[in-house]
Image 1 (cartoon, rainbow, N blue to C red):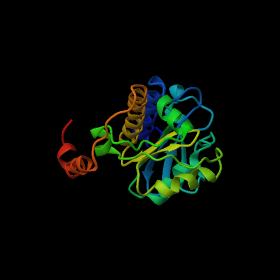
Image 2: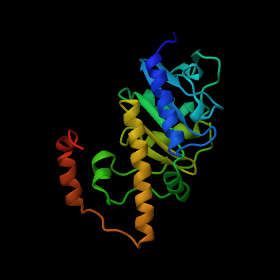
Image 3: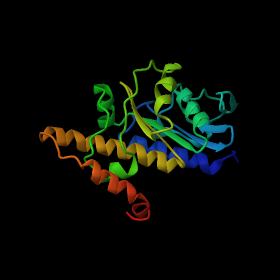
Length: 215
């Protein structure tokens, strides 16, 4: 039996969701979970998320040293590792290329408009990072300014990234970003929307505890 069997299964389940919902194609995206202090399981490089199996996942330390696994970790592991080092409370990171979020990232358009009560309550503004060359230290460096103040970003010309205290939380945040980007696209096509006022947004934030126990 492999170590962290249930976590491996959960990661593969999220990978399938990413693929089935059209958030990744081919070898796009990467998913990781902190399994214990100083250790993460991460998806390997070069494998489609729709055909990921538990034995393919790679166990690494927070410096990227492979501890277990016979495949190289994701080529974008550096951004995952930076988030875990900077945020001890984060237990999972999800990166994908959802179409509407990625379109915003290509256009360098952050999600700042206060159109949706759910967005105000759950994530607030979603910034766009500076452009960073893939698989280099530029990628984690571009995310670092936002890692303590946000839980999701749009990666310029690349896709979206979300993190959280559980894997499903990170996935849900990425999905909220994509749904918000989709709605903003439709609002723009209709000529623009009406934002919540700053006062309305503040009132919603003050009620966050109330809404956290309700759907």
